Image (cartoon, rainbow, N blue to C red; front, side):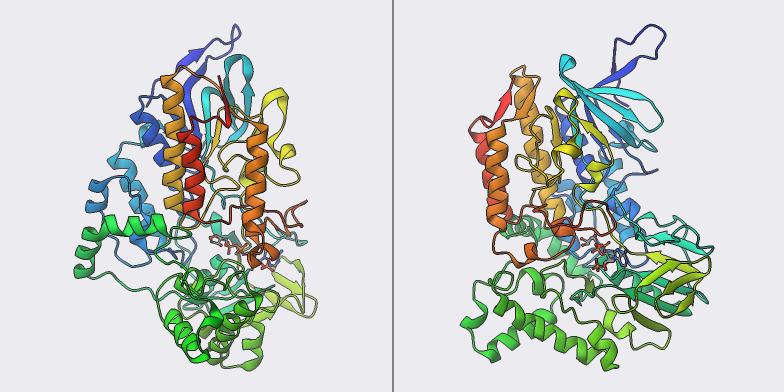
Length: 546
Ligand code: NA7
């Protein structure tokens, strides 16, 4: 464990440990940031609310949780040795394997000794006189550091529905991201799942295998596409190991760091037969190709988007036997790919099973959760287990839950009340020495690729500051304004920014989050990196360094 210095404390009070950097969160970004800062010789402390490391992969233990990115494009790329010693078993690895992987990484780089678990950060206040951050944990303990790095994850603040009676249910109820650590069995059980996003879809297709009865409460359907997962053969394993440089080179070049990249052709530049054949090929291919490797205009031209939406609707009708149910599963309020596409394995076929029923709660809203189950406007259902697959207060929610205050006591939550304002998603003006990893306005995509880039950018900035004996970095207001305008500009014309979803910061379960904002950077990852590289190359002149 890094030995902290201690700051002066009032007589009688416990001394406050003083670190060079405090990192909030021991997920993929916090882990790598810890590793990089330790390489600089810094004393670092990671505070993690959970009992273990892994972030998303620690919390999301629900049945069926797995990658939608190819496993070998998802792991860390920074260590050749690590790449050569870890074998993924499936093209899209399940959550327990990813959690094992992250624990392996932590052991290999001896990360655990600087991590403190069961330690939720309640408050972080900047103190100008010390040019550093006072951090208070929920247990009341106080800590101090020059740098504060938020590695809190864009999808880590779960939300329960605002329905009367939540909490009165006498059976078992779990949000998917707060799943029990002991396996939950569904045999002989009557199970409800509320929510049909990427998480709900993975859960439903798994629970349907064993539950006596599964009732899915769907508000809005999503466009789903087949994952086509399978084990990685030994031969493939050898090839993957040899191909790692090429795999990561490709991820660096694609729009959102996946192995897939948009087809340069426009939807209507090919014949209808060629178009259909291309869609068929994508539908039969593994992973996100159908979403991010489709015709280049699919997400900007409504007519192009309608073509692929109609194609997927036909697939749903072919796969679901009851035409009434098939129609319920086809989205009407948004086109294919304009919200996050859940990838599935026999999801639609689940609705052909006698033990599964679908309830459209737009037609018959849930009125309340009762001690025995769920009451809708036209029926009373009894359950043994209720699963809330109701998503997250995304992107800014994990910041809102911490009392973060910058210069003059300004709260970050207030500053972002009308939507986040950042510099490259990494800095917020008036919050010196706070650096955000995967904060709002960063390129998300295949997240570990973005994480590695952001962590290295932050590490370079801190290295530069230390070399020059600088102790304070803040974003200049004009730089924030320019970046925020740029984020808005690159998001113009994107159909996904015209739809309510977590991409656009809308969450009906959170007070004040009913209107769309531009929450993420929706340009390409290479363009994002080019901007950030330029800032570093030009000696950080958009930052006020002192
Ligand atoms: P999502 O994608 O936000 O999905 C949440 C689902 O829960 C979605 O179907 C919602 O319906 C539904 N929901 C939310 N609140 C309610 C209420 N109050 N009543 C009924 N239904 C509700 O979250 P996920 O966890 O699936 O996925 C988040 C990301 O994690 C995912 O994109 C991956 O990148 C990993 P709605 O569509 O809002 O009508």
